[in-house]
Amino acid sequence: MIRNIVRIAAVFCALALFAGISYAQTDSASQSTSTSTKKSSKKAKTPKSQQVDVNSASKDQLTAVSGIDDATAQKIIDGRPYKTKKDLVSKNILTQDQYDKVKDQLVAHGGKKSKKSAAAAK
Picture (tube, rainbow, N blue to C red):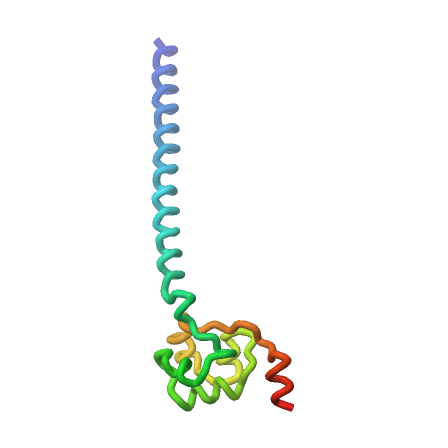
C-alpha cells in the first residue's frame, strides 16, 4: 500500500517537473522573439542612404536634416573633421537635445582631412 502511494507521488512529481520545464522554454522563446523584434525596429529608423556625413556634406545637405539651421550647418562645416558624430556635442556645436533629435540622420565617416584638402588649406 505504501509502495503504491510513493509511486503515485513520484509520477506526479515527474509530471510537474516536465510541465515546468516545458512552460519555461515556451515563455523564454516568446520573450526572445519580442526582444529581437524590438531591436530590429530600433535599428531601422533611418536608412543609411539617407544619412548625412558631417565630414563631407555641403551646407545644403546639412540643412536638409531636420533640426539643423543655416548657422548650425556652418558651425559643423567650420569644426571639421569629426572622429565621431558625438564630437558635435563635445565641441559645443549642438546641444544634447539637438543631437538626440538628429543623431539617427547623421554619420561621421573618415575623421581625417584628405591630402587634397590639407594641401588646399596650406
